[in-house]
Image 1: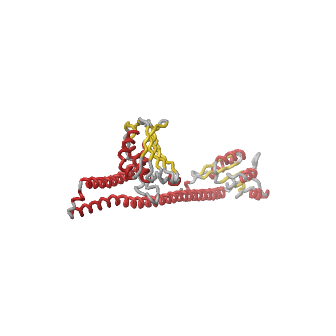
Image 2: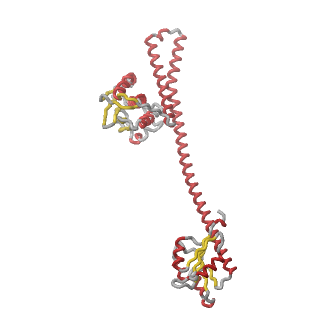
Image 3: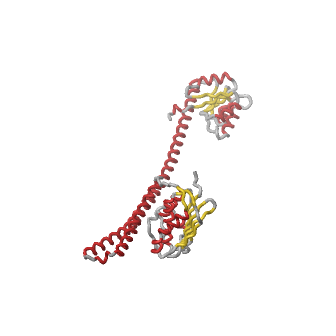
Length: 398
């Protein structure tokens, strides 16, 4: 803002209206506003309402005189820094000037007023006020800029931390993906090389019907493992872009879990485990059956992976207005610290003897359950297994 754009307010105080009009005519300009007061009380009221560049006070006024008004101004925080110029018709020999300076005046004028002196002094104080005001605005602008820079710096630091975390997550993810994808691929490659070797040696015994069935089963497991990895990565992408589709339709949750357990029979046998299934029939609701199967599959896979080959309990029941699925294992358990993290991306229950998968299953499961307005939780102690509980509303929220 330019100095000339800063409007200055001037206060003149005199008990004679004609003196006020005469003084106003001398000092008034387009870039100034002159306020007139006929008494000290009027002046005090104006001083509390406005910010003045200077005050010109008549010394001799009925009631409170100019000196007393000046002392009150100096004792008030809002007005103590306003420059005061006294005007008096008394002679110089009365020593009014000395008393005026004692009261806090910066200058003293005697009547009759010198027109050029009045204009000059007012111009000086108005210019000082404008410079002070401009400097204050610059300081405020600098302070505002500093606060904005501090805020921006804090945001940049937060962004840097998030970027570093994202880079670490990316590196961890790529490392896990590399390992998890390579494992089934290596199995397929080794199987292919072994078959080529048998074919090169015309070893027909290696391709009996029984062995062919075993080969196909191994290939299917490796291919399904790759498909599952790819589907998990695609689901994470859908979640991030808000495109995870949920298509609710009425079905019996207990029957769906029962059928899913039948499909898991080969994996349960391979893990040398068993499943005790308990269900209340029917448990009917409006959910996306495919997605709910995905959630229960993830929980079963984890229970088999970390269940230490011990029996797994799966229960489906109704509690209040919710359908509940409990999957309980008797395996390694999860620490309190890890319980806060298992539903995050790329987090896996760490144990020296078992660690597999992308660490996406529980993250995806939580997002799917949340999309159904439900909850998924875990209760566990180290060495005492884990209970994962999925709660789904029986009536979908609209």
